Length: 132
Image 1 (spheres, rainbow, N blue to C red):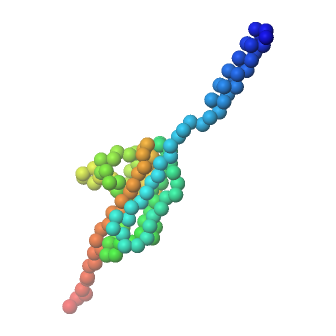
Image 2 (image 1 turned 135 degrees about the vertical axis):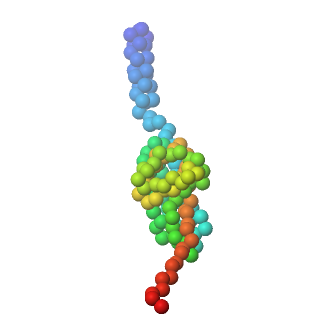
Image 3 (image 1 turned 180 degrees about the vertical axis):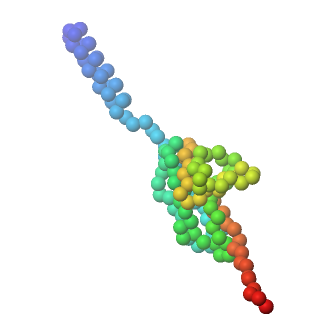
C-alpha cells in the first residue's frame, strides 16, 4: 500500500471522526417545576414542561387548588434564602427575605428541580351595621 493511500485513509477517518463528534448534541439536563398544595383540600396545579438551566420559567396560578376557610396567597419555595432571579413586578419580598411568587411572574431555572408551596391566608369577614 502506498503512503499516499494511507495518508488519505487516515485523513478520511479523521474528518469522519471529527464530524461524528461535532454532530452529537451535548447532554443537557432539563429540570421540573412542581407545585405542592401545602394542605389544600382539593385541586392540583401541574406543570408538564421541563426546563433547561437559565431558561425563563413562568409561574403558574392557583388553578383549581382550594383550601377550605383560606384564600390562596401565592407560591413560595421551601428555601426562603433561594435567590433566583425573578420579575419583581409580580413578586413580593418579605422582611425576612422570603420571596412570594404570583401567577405570571418568571424566574430563571436553576440547575435543579424547583418545588413551589402554596401559601394560604385565613379567610376573614367583616360585618358592618347600619345606623341603629
